[in-house]
Length: 356
Ligand code: PHE
Image (cartoon, rainbow, N blue to C red; front, top):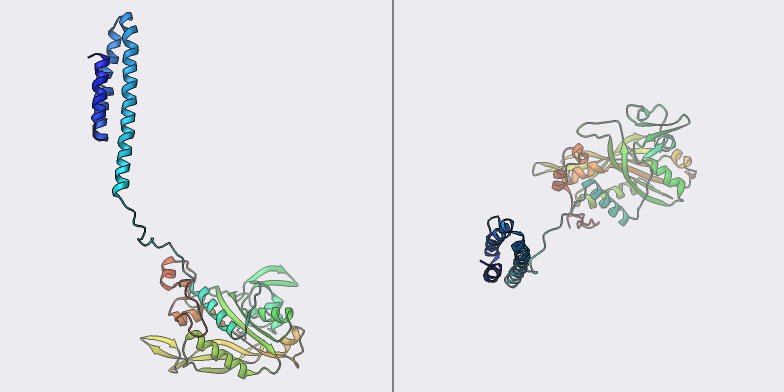
């Protein structure tokens, strides 16, 4: 077949190809290894120079024309395909979008937020202090004697401060009492939530844990104010009205008198919960701020009195939300946080806690 006839026939085949598969067959039959155009190209080798000079350009022009026709038809078929899909496929814009991956709030952060909220409603501001604290704020100013066991290396993480300025990882949030009294003038009402450190580790103790301190300094403050404040806070936090408190005489160097505060518990579906009065459990340390501590901060203890209290934030979380191993709080296990974590939409309030 002459290149001219072949071109006419191939042009018709290309034009008639109904889909991409058929077009590919036409391409293979023309330009493939044993295709008709390929055979013509091969025949050039056997020709004498004169014939080749005539036939060469024709056959090459044929190949180019066929290649171009194939490409044009391919593009046309693809366009038609797309147009068909656009005409038949629909995107339903009313379908709900998939949920974005959301994090959850750690119970410790949640409980700190709840406590901050509850005490804010009672007129308390939030105070902060450094976690790397000096020995004076952590111990001396709080009237803790040299011989007190808390000062021992096996209880406290000491850092390499200088001889006259030893540094520790704060063992409690009480140094924030000192910092607040020294930085601000009374009357004062603050809470100080934060991390504290002790050289201790078992199922109920981790070397780092969280405390919240409360401090009130004013004129004519007495234990009655302390008890009312704690009762109001515990009722709001545990979302129950049947909270009973018992103040047991105790000893802290920085309070006088001092008390351990017990709260009544009862059994609820096999779990010990706060509220009721089947038994007592200790939840706080508290007392009237020692006059010597007030004087250490440059205030006149005859004019100013106050109360202070401290408790474990992690323990409050465990009691309220029913976790039983403190170490799991700090394992970083996502399954645990998914199980116990909170949605950021759970906003705590004084009237209803997070349950509302
Ligand atoms: N700082 C004490 C502790 O860590 C708790 C406490 C705070 C006691 C304030 C009395 C007053 O155990």
